[in-house]
Image 1 (cartoon, one colour):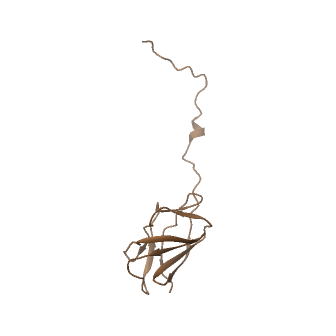
Image 2: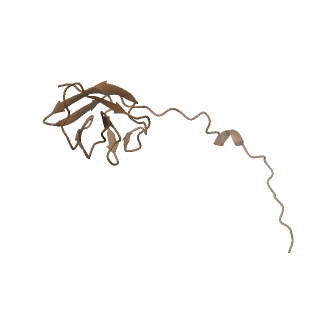
Image 3: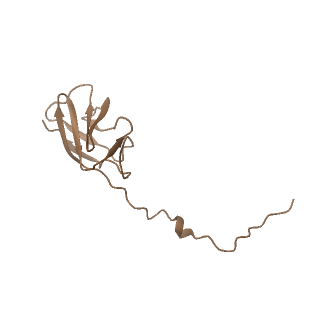
Length: 115
C-alpha cells in the first residue's frame, strides 16, 4: 500500500480557531427576591432567559422543588416549606439550569428575601 502524502500548499491559519479570547457571556443579575404566598419571585435585569430544569438556588440550605416563568424577566421558585423572615437565598456560580438569551448565567450572589 502506498503512503499518502499531505499535498497542502498553504500552512493552516491557527489564529482563526483561537478560542482563548472568546467574548464573555452576559450574566443576569437578580434585582429582587420577594416572598409572595409562600413562593419567592425573582426579578432579573435580563429581558429573556431560559430555565432548563430546577435551578440550584438555595433558601438557607434547602433546594427548590419547582420553577416557573412569570414574565420575560421574572420567575418563581417553590420550596417544600415556605420561607420565613430572616432567611436568605444563595445563587451558585454558573448554574446550568438557568441561561440568558445571550448564553450567560445568573450572577452568583447571596441576598435576603424581601417580605
